[in-house]
Amino acid sequence: MIRFTKHARQAIQTRGIAVAWIERTLSAPDRVEADPRHPARTRCYKAIAERGGRVLRVVHRACGDDILVITTHFDRGAKR
Image (cartoon, rainbow, N blue to C red; front, side, top):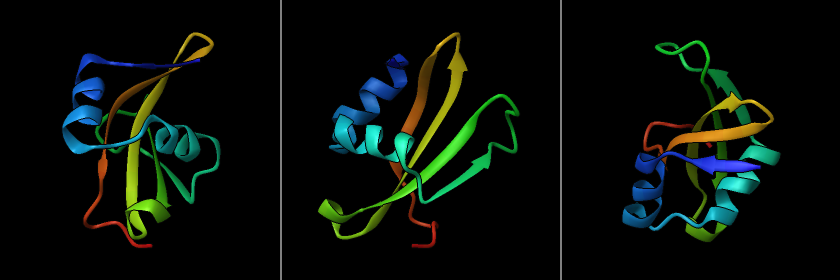
């Protein structure tokens, strides 16, 4: 199950990010890397066709059997 922090829920609403895009990014990312500042967190990236190929970054960590999404945004510096 995917859960969201309060910050992530606000980011989704403010930034116009569809939950389906987050689910797609987590299930089939284009790229995955460890978060350099927080070793328990993972960053997943995926180009979102519906947003002109912009790259969505989803930062998450394991929370028991669940995935806890910390934040999400379109990453201006990410390579497609």
